[in-house]
Image 1 (cartoon, rainbow, N blue to C red):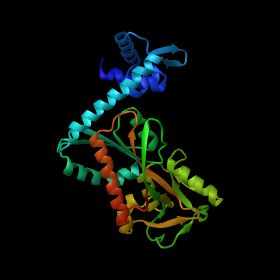
Image 2 (image 1 turned 60 degrees about the vertical axis):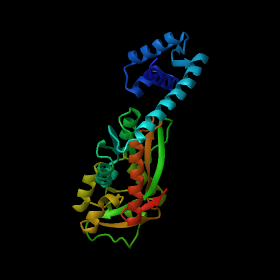
Image 3 (image 1 turned 45 degrees about the horizontal axis):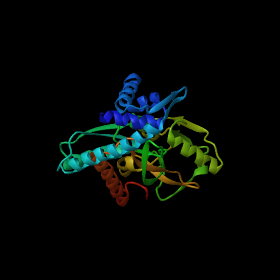
Image 4 (image 1 turned 180 degrees about the vertical axis):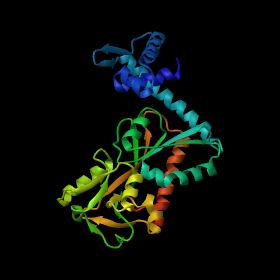
Length: 306
C-alpha cells in the first residue's frame, strides 16, 4: 500500500468519478484505475461499484477512505513538523497572482522571501482569476492571490482586503479630492476590460445601479494597455491605485474616487483544499497579508482590511 494510492482513493471517493479524479491529480486514467485495482486486491474487497455515470463507494470503501484521510493527515503533520524545524525553507513555492497584484507585490514578496529563506526557490505566475483557479486545481500552484474567487470544495479562500477602485485619467484631468458620480461616466470615453474580465462585471453592475450604459468604450484586457491608452488620452479607466501609485505621484496619471455607487472588489488569499498546505506556502501567504496591511497603513493600497 502506497501513499499515492490513498490519495487517489480519497479523490475518487469525493468526485465519484475516476476520470474527474485523473484530471484533478494530473494522472492518466489507466494509471489511476490501476492504483484503485491494486488497492482493492491488497485489501481483498471492492472499494467502488462501477456504473454508467461514474463510481459509487461501497461500505468497505467508505471505511477505507475514513482511515486514508486520517493517515494522510498524520503524514502531513509529520512533514510540517520536520519542515518547521528548519531554520530556512528549501524546495520551491509556486505563487499565482492577478496582474494588478503581481505588478505591486512581486518585488516586495521576493525581497522578503530571499531575506528570510534564501534557499527557497520561487516561481511567480500572473493571470486572470479563472486561469489561476484552474492551475490551483491541477496542482500547479501552492498559493493564489486573486480577486473575488468563488469558494469551492477544492479551494480555501481567506478574504484579505475590500479594495476601492478609482477613475484613472491622463495627467491633470482628475482630482483625488473631487469624487466623480458613476452616472457621469455614461458619455465619457472609457478604456475598460472586455466582458469576460471580472473587473468589467463590477463596472457593468455599477452602471446598472447608476441607471446608465457605457457608450464610448475601448476594450483592453491587458493592464499595461489600459494604462498606456489612458495616458495617451484615449479615455479614462477604472483601476485600483496601488499598482500605479508611482506614476500617480509623479503626475503621469490622475485619479478621482467614484461614488453612487463606489466600485470595489474583494482580494483573497487562496490555497488548495485538496492538498496539504506546505509551511513555505503558508509563510508566503502570511507574508502577503503583512505586506498588504503595510500598504493600507501607508495609504498606497486604498481599501478596507477584512
